[in-house]
Amino acid sequence: MADEKKMVGDVYFPAPEVIANAHIKDYEKVHAEALADLPGFWGKIATENFEWYQPWETVLDESNAPFYKWFVGAKVNIIHNALDRHMRTAVRNKAALLFEGEKGDTRVYTYQQLNYEVSKFASVLRSLGVQKGDRVTIYMGRIPELMIAMLACAKIGAMHSVVYGGFSTEALHGRIEDSASKVLVTADGAWLRGSIVPLKQIANEALERAGTIQSVVTVKRTGQEVEMVSGRDHWYHDLMALPIADPKAPTEVMDAEDPLYILYTSGTTGKPKAILHTHGGYMVGTATTLKWVFDIKADDIWWCAADPGWVTGHSYIVYAPLILGATSFMYEGAPTHPYPDRWWSMVAKYGITILYTAPTAIRGLMRFGESWPNRHDLSSLRLLGSVGEPINPEAWKWYHRVIGKEKCPIMDTWWQTETGHFMITPLPCVPLKPGSGTRGFPGVDLDVVDEDGEPVAANEEGFLVIKNPWPGMLRTILGDPDRYVQQYWTRFQEQGWYLPGDSAKKDEDGYIWVIGRIDDVIKVSGYRLGTAEIESALVSHEAVAEAACIGVPDELKGNIIKAYCILRQGFEGSEKLEMALRDHVGHEMGPIAKPATIDFVDSLPKTRSGKIMRRVLKAQALGQELGDLSTLAD
Ligand code: PRX
Image 1 (cartoon, rainbow, N blue to C red):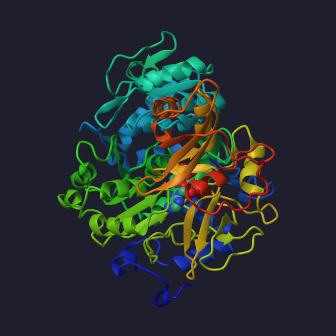
Image 2: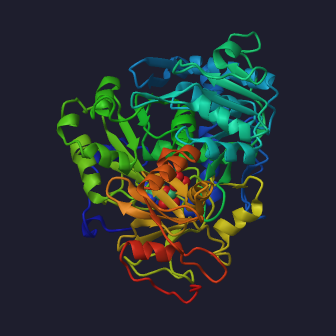
Image 3: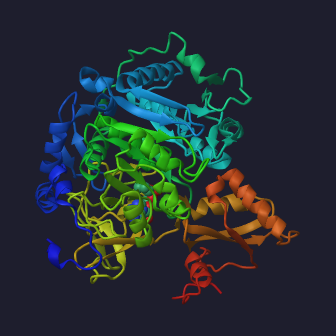
């Protein structure tokens, strides 16, 4: 173990009372025990903290690696642990969800009420013909019905495929088509910065291109006129008022390894991939990581400020807090609407005890200065969290001092859509260094290695690798198991290691410093975008023959998108065309995917086999050495 007194760099030691109160008081001991007997470690946790309809025969089956299986032979449904079992205890009457809309409207759902709504919607979905194993696409803003729809799918054994409400027509269409969803659940609109995101209108456009959807269920949120297609489209409130909406709907009995959901994410090449998670391992992994890292207690008010449309929301807004019987807070709108203290006013109003957000949000709020948070009583906060991209030490320190009043440890959690739950993360008892996620969660064995898989020297950059399986790991890419193997398990196939696609450094104390992606994924404001999808949106415009995108560092957003376009004959580059192309990407993909700048060029650097060398574009844009150009075609 790192000798605390001799630790290198800027170190923040946990206060004795924080350690005394924490679920896990000795990281080193628990981590060592877990590594010594991984199935024993997770098996014990799974037995003591969860209810299973039928126990497993094997905790971890590695016989067909990298297609690992967890809790093999067990029967379970994540909803049984997230809702059903709470109906027998006092948790039933506790608030599961506190909600505030952007306009200030509020709602509270107790566990009993949430279960009632979920059961009703589960039977509505059944009556629309949704069966175990079917896919349901959900495209909504941050409102309770989004959570209800997800939970209802899980309850009947259907896979939800949530498409982030900030995505647009083509992104939605592609994800519906790939998943072959039968039903789409959406809303008329979502409130954002005082205006309406026209979700139903975008969905209608996407559905003109997609054929598999038989029914659309629309939640009335914003109330403007929307076009409803007769026979296909229903209002959520109409269906929920019918006798078919049965509050006693049974929960489907699932195998632990049955799919829970798919979630699309960008990878190295081509279309987004449908990452598949399962009921059993994901349940154990998400709930345990939340409990230990954010030290959830019965009276906490937990605010994960992510969007449920991304994995952070799936794991830590929807599933893990409910499994733990915790109270969550959800806010619909923008952090700065109507003023830059909106978030801080809600921390005070609801007595938020733990806040978990992204560095980009912290940097965005930091810009407005300290007077906005200082106006509010933030004394209820006891822990803070960060996720989605590396947090720069200045933002960490501001968050620590101005928001956490120097008493709240910051849990900088590194993980991915694929990992399902936290992988590199402090626990409250661990000394912190601003900008580092510290070490592996107990049982997660990781390292930073060179091309050959040899550990690199301290503070040198290398590939981050994960050396052993974990319960919430993705099981496959739906419909493309070869790509699953290729993308994650081939680079270090001999060693059997998982490749996350990030570069990192490890310091003298064994602390991990994640640097960023090594592939064609761009993180914009913490959102994960693939260059391929943005490029194909650009090329779908009549003026563009070829396009390439790269991410360039940005103080606020982490990265911004820079695009290069070769135009078709008859078109000329102009500011007007640049604007038109940006709008076109916004329309097809969504506002977050809009390139910040577009350069019109005559050629792009390519390999002899025709692959665009984005690395060269990036080096050029950043004024760096161009590196090895031997594969460049001309
Ligand atoms: O590059 C890493 C970065 O986000 C990627 C995963 O993105 P996504 O699947 O969208 O999941 C985001 C939320 C879990 C990683 O490969 N990343 C995530 N968290 C951190 C991070 N980079 C540095 N520090 C983090 N805490």
